[in-house]
Length: 146
Image (cartoon, rainbow, N blue to C red):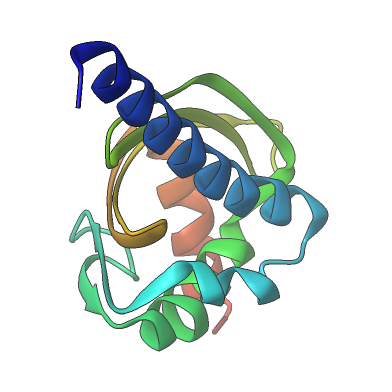
């Protein structure tokens, strides 16, 4: 394969992976991520900071869809979502996003690093920037038994 064809193949791979990741966020904006499970490998891994209730490594698509995402949905308002950037290179997609903190006027910036394989997500590594407002709402929910 020529270098030009390799570059085109790489660009097509990156663009397809970027579309899969964008579909996840657009589902979040609509409040419907039910169909996204088809885009996750069965042995999908989500890695989030340990200070969050869903922190650590969650193994398996089912754990991510049924344990992590419902907790995230309680405290993050994807109705107030925007991208700072969505970039892809080969099987790696990075989304730098802004999301509202539920019940507050606050926004939080999150860097999410997706590893893709064969057009499906293999893993996501998540970093939260300045999570004080998020931690406050988590603590308030915990105090109210939620």
